[in-house]
Image: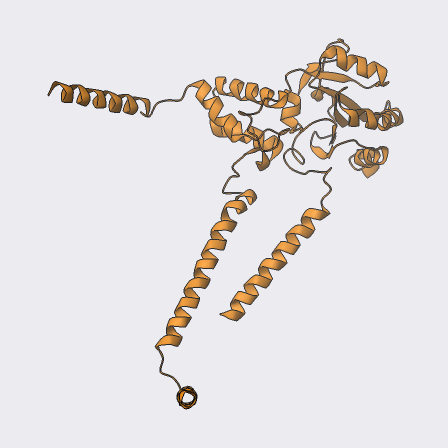
Length: 177
Length: 153
């Protein structure tokens, strides 16, 4: 009996150590719950600049970088220079960036877009439906959508240039050929 | 006599009212929204349900649940939509049949293991208490008694 009990305690401790080791190895910015690996939820929403609607479907076949942002979000301001540089790098290619303005009035959102030099299309998520369908916790969050419309990755928190480029290049068909 | 009748009628009325209130009935749309949002975790709060939170995100989630109820979706379908986006984490009570269900299973397993251990200990003690002492144990006991008697004089 004692041997069995000792073995059970050892197995339980090993299980605990293994669980903790796996948990600590995970990058908290890369939460793989919910939508990652699944088709990106479709959406159509009004552009912040008032030039009509934008839908995800119109970018089928392209790599889409979907960034949730807000002017009241300090980390969004921090990550913006990296987004601008990456946008300029891939401008006119098979990579598109879309900004989704999160829980904000359109005037404030548009003011931020102009102030921060955001040249990529931005849309208003007035009722929060886009954010809820993607399982967003709060801005900034960035999703990498493959040309076949499947979400390949998600980054929670401010993103840097290297992470952006790596995320894009790993799902770009040109890079995989 | 009249007082008893009045008392009896009052008790009867209370029982009838309680029975009427507790009768099984089809929940209204608002009741369903309350029930579903009480089970959903507010993503931007600390341990609060969507129903109890005053945050903007919770308000948007309540609106979405209300819309889905109006569209005729079942509770399970609505919960599945949120689980699809946020994972099982979004449910305040983790579902039993999933990895999160381990939080239900571990305490039960721990209690069962504890009971089994205690039972095994008791059985072992009973077995030890019931058997006849070995000649060696008898000799040791006799020697101890003799020693104690000698010490007492």
